[in-house]
Length: 90
Image (cartoon, rainbow, N blue to C red; front, top):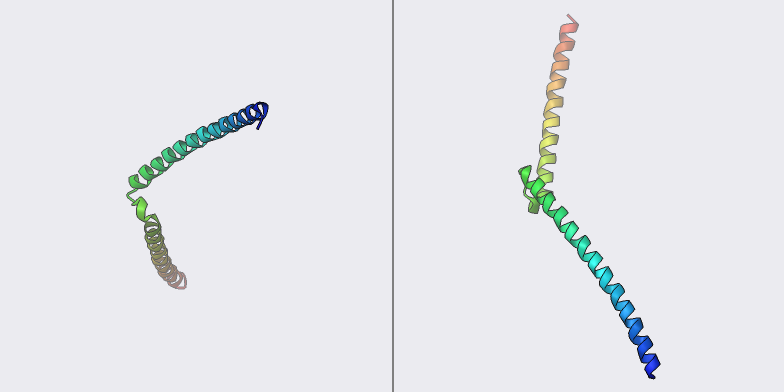
């Protein structure tokens, strides 16, 4: 390689290196931002009395509980409606 080729190559490599460093800095900033968001979510989840490590299981339990309550409410409502219908027919 001639001196001019070497200089050109070095300049090109320096520009590329600077671009990579800039992108790296941007990505590190994004990573830090996402880590803070995650920490805030963990705090919020814990504040609700849930375990962030078992969130899928906690969600499943909550859904099952809700479904059981809906069925119980529907059953009670049906009984009340039947009682009202009996009263209305008298």
